[in-house]
Image (cartoon, rainbow, N blue to C red; front, side, top):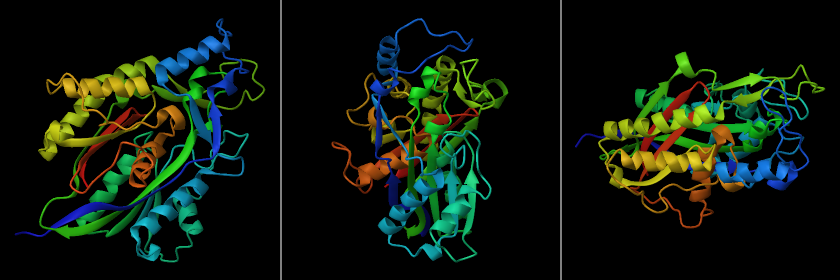
Length: 360
């Protein structure tokens, strides 16, 4: 029987900031609409409606002294330790993020040198053959990095790749925009390694699409909704939430289905769907729509583990953090066993969508 080269995750790690920000902390905020007018509802009404729509009750923010590159390094250290590898044998370090090292109180990005270069430096890796670079691809950046890592391994160019997703979104949102309550900080990492075998394991198939012609401005950078904001020169992360919801619901389930078809895996074989989490209700709707494409009225219980209610939306860090929590037994009712089929999926700025079918 022919020996196969599989791309397998052999170690996971994450960094979840200790600072908890619950919804009550936004009661003193001053919210405005996109036209600059102060919202006529009370903050209690705004926050309660936000919870109902997103399911987010709290999120995590990094300490002022902590940067994206710090969290990325700490998550990477865990993944390296869990995999048992020598860090000097890494062929690539790919770090997905979108805003670089944002300093507390500033919205100016700091990406020179790259975040990956900073991580390699902090890991004290001496090997010049360990290539470090960044991935800027919106929220799907970590999964797209994993897809690239798989290509490196399948081409024979790499044996071990460190793939990290890290973000400090708490420093780039407009405090006068209620959508800002979605965002959070964190980091997650995995080691993807080449493994020989007679059966196909690890990465089975993947699918990516970019809808830039019509949807490139669904997420964008803009000025504060409060027109007399003292930091008027700053630009903040903005989104067209309702349109984004509709776009995701229309295209993400089909992308996942296409990916499953490429892998010849039936939906009934999927044990877990690890999806990027920007809105709890949106993910529930995506799951329902996905199974409806197969004529199934109800998805299996516990197929889609969720962290958004207590971790918020940490962008590229969401999926690897979720995987690490499951691996460590910190997600009650959820586990990943050898042979289980997992689907990764993400949607975000670009607009970009990607999906991957993976056998543990």
